[in-house]
Length: 324
Image (cartoon, rainbow, N blue to C red):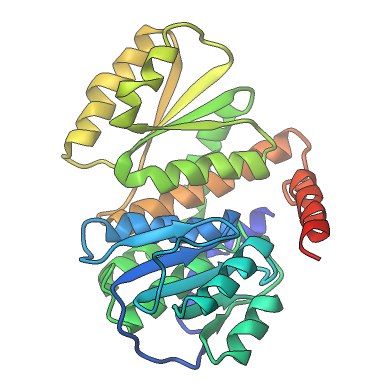
């Protein structure tokens, strides 16, 4: 599993070169990304990146159904690494009924068949990975198709910088190892500002799936209006990881000047990860790489198989009985 994360640079580079089937230009006034788990997180990243740049809304839908407002003015992007995610397939069927403009990304499966049968724009990525470890294949394919549609969510230099940060495998492994050694025997709490919420989610999910650990995340400034009070009452076996964007924003000032000191005063073990890069995309990718690496390191230290997700497999088997 560690080898998958080590190969992220190659994955990201390759994703920018996949053939695009049935490409066509569209007119649309909103974007909705469909996807679950390790596939759907790509939509969360796009939503975060587009928040301060796009004049149209980006929504992420993780459900069997889609909202009633989706129509012919919606660019509906379905992402399922396996191509067989039932929630995503069902949502695509609804999207067809609502006349949405549909794009699909998968490694095959039923989603590929639906896309090709309906002449939808489609990108087929390499199979053989887990969805979470194949993240660069999905995210960079998504970024590429958006740029082809003149959705300028990032600039070319940002894409290049974000891929370059994956080159330093040894440095990233060392950064991950330092954190894994501290988090290994704890319930990790990931704290980030609202701009980097998808990264906090990604950290939590990687620890859940690869390390088989309970983990949670907090997002500022909302954290200051509810969750923060809960920390007054119990320490538990928690350790806090702050995702530090290393910028001059008010959010980073809050993380460094208030949260860090507040939690240490309450005797929590707190550490920070400074996110490398000059662009938000690079910071997100660097942080995601660290999350994947450290979660596998923890699994190895605990003699846990990071590939197995027995609970998810049980859920999928249950779903098959529901959607016969």
